[in-house]
Image 1 (cartoon, one colour):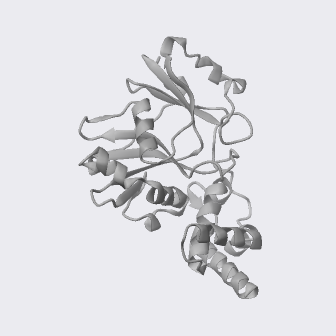
Image 2 (cartoon, rainbow, N blue to C red):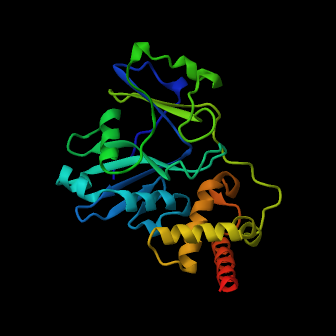
Image 3 (cartoon, one colour):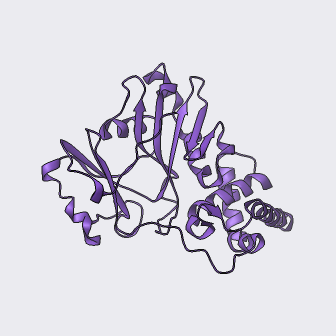
Length: 281
């Protein structure tokens, strides 16, 4: 699987050329995947690759599920007879200290497409078109095909220069800027970062009580049912934990590690789900 391109800050980027695309950039982590001729998807983070969505680390679970569920495999097969030569790159969106409407922000947004045949990444317009044809979300466009000399990138040096967000009440948290020659940069209105570790670490049980509320359990059970899956304790637990981790990542992770025992947290959530189901019967 091809490594996805690194994106420097705007301050560290030389002048852009040709035509420029500017798109809204949500917070999250790099996530990529390939598709075998059989249709099976292999996912990858910076730390490893995974053959099934269920084995993907919890912070990437919702992104993997979206890709697995929404990817139009027939459209991909119709477009190429060698899908495994393509690497799809994007962002597994999550809360890194900047609030979004997490029900509106897709769990995965595509950014780049590597073509093994041409040995290159597609241009921003072509990559966006590929993701759209495959039924996968991509980044909202702020400006398209803007001549580089006429693109005012200096406005992003000030918070007031950021455009309204497509996903949150207020300005976009960040923007991704690319040209067709491969130039790229990212800039943030507020720099995302992990929340500082609390002086007293909460226990797994305390976290489960905070996040696995009756309302949240019922909401998650309804979502599992809407997806056509069996509404079991395990299914509700997995969906609830993945959603909570995505929406509260900055609070629940420090230096990439869960602030308590993740296994114990999952067990405590499952216990609360089981108790609720027993009470409701």
